[in-house]
Image (cartoon, rainbow, N blue to C red; front, side):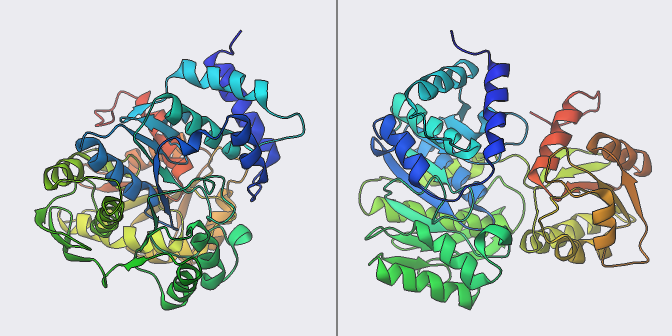
Length: 433
């Protein structure tokens, strides 16, 4: 008898005891037991430090608008585990999660101990095969070279950017991190590369040459005109489009949109067909939770999963832009992070622009304590409030805010997920779906 959904989720989270294991042997054995489901459909593979989830969502939305049956695999989830695995934009059904656990555990060799991410990746690949998708858009979990997703052949590969994150696993220099990210480049498979520092670019370029993989570079082989998601132009590998608009907030999403379009153009060189109508429809309708997501007004309540210095540098100007739209608008930050992140580097661009900071502790084994966060505050004279839980932190922020103010919850996608779950239980006039 299949497990209940609650028991299934408990089983999956129980696999976290195996930690993070970078390597492909286990996932290859798991997929072999499933008879290689990942080989039954086309794949677009997207890696990078920041923006890969948004880019994957845009590519999937355009492909779906074109009439393809599309699978989308991303991580982490915000509220519901099923967010990770979607077909045609719909989460994998609860009963299928339970069925897959029974199915996979029934054929798994006894010597294998897959991690949470390895098991979930196998589940996603098998679900996409069972659902007869035409194409799957696959987001790398962490790194690339030894990531569990790095077992599929793809029509095109993308590396959105390279910045400092997960240094304990990927290395302490941009060159080392770029080496891991570039590990998803396959022999002869075209790769699209977003903006990145020269030292990272050199590593990616070398890997592409070694693999004889055609390389298409942002601001060289494809370009974006204007940096506003409300209206921008794209000049690409084969086509150009004017007056595009993207439904995702933030000027950085224009760069992500350009990368997604270049990746689809690369796919169109071999198998895909993409029309201008599908591009416009997909970009204008794409939704991606937890990234500059405005969920209420008066005060503005903004959720953003920024979690490293590079993403904080993107978030800061957006907050300033929003603050400038209302005289006297104060920025209140609710921040919770993982203790293995660069907390001081993350806070450096954000702390000076805030009126109030509230530190909280995420409900996660790797969470930084409020004391850790306070000790990382670069402005020693700035007073921060300490709230033991995300729900208390948001409640305090709402108490301190006037209707004209802006509250931003940031520092981790896990924090954003906890806050979304909490807010759905409240009676606030939220814009949450």
